[in-house]
Length: 120
Image (cartoon, rainbow, N blue to C red; front, top):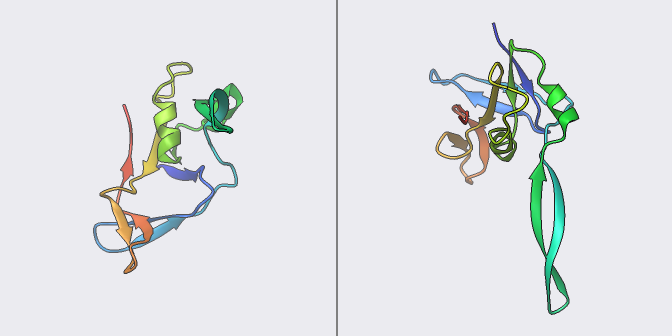
């Protein structure tokens, strides 16, 4: 049986097909892409930067239990999809579907998801 490990700073509410829902609270650990900015130009006194994202090796230590489903943000999932070492294929790493799978309140705010996204 899998257990969810929420590596985002937000609770994730999941709505099942039968209408029931459950909430996955944050684990207290957050997986984020790290960033570094390189100034590429200055336009009229305003810097223009090229943002480079990377993953620090120690951040990958969060993924250590093959019986867990790790929830990360979609940008973080996209970053993870670009690495080949270490091989993370033994782990379920997903992001909440906040696009067509999103559940919204009457004001259009996302209140949950109907499904998760994986990337190759």
